[in-house]
Length: 419
Image 1 (cartoon, one colour):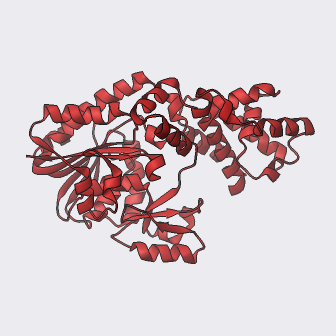
Image 2: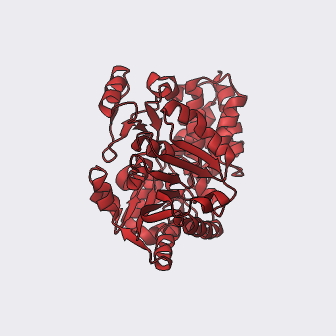
Image 3: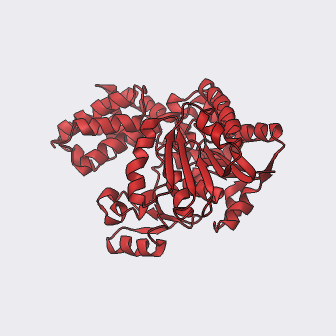
């Protein structure tokens, strides 16, 4: 594609994502479906430029003030994430000079809010939780793209064999440091073209998400519920851990998300998964299973702020009011899911949020209201599940993962056993 046309398309895409009226990943996917003539390198340049602008929107908008022309075009020039050769022919000498001068500005001298690129309410909450030094380390980590983590489907393959296969394909990859199922691949290989993916030997899953499934520690022959299953990433991990035995219910209020589980389930080779759409957390299906379940995972609806490396638009689309509403929903879901457990059963409450309001506060309120649930130490549970370095993954009794400390998405989990 001619560089001028490519820059024009980038400007058009930025105009769409910066409206912040729907998730950026959906907007980018729809844009690429509309422009099917874009090649892989061009798609990469457009998507990564859009995400770079979303990560540093206040700073880039401030720096772009000195330029001229459409704001989205100026932002595209400053945040361009493709090959610099792709811009040749699209940028005149004046624009090129301006771009060079602005990109040479030392941003360390800018005000704090133009360096952390977070809304004030979120920056304040994270600083309070982490302290100043840790906060800025988190900011730096969230300004980077997330790596590609894979989970080996242990029902079909062994990690060492998949690593050898990736090496033979020229893909740089290594075992994840904590999850015994995980592989971290360098770059962004076209996974869907690889035989191992189409065989169902691997699934894309962040190492932190894998650790949530390991906390559940589902066993052969058990009855297990993934209460908020979504597209089923953790469901599939649980099913493989159960060796496709027992019964694994995948509940969700969204039939659309559960539909996305079906092709993944077919690849996985699992026969013990039973997806079911529920109306709400008090659905009749839940009542019929009360007191019968061995293990329940509640990966609750949350702000998603632990995934800002992948979804930087979330920080601009969330608010304190939305978090308060989510906290109420999380509490209701956790209370309802707890009824499923039989005595001796295990309950795991998890989010991909960084905020204590959605994490510790929800777990502590649940513990205070449910004397029949005994809290378990996450480090001990992970250690028994063959997770390496479990002590480094916890904060008190809870799993607490941070992008800057653990190179995962931000995750939280609390574990209880019903007395």
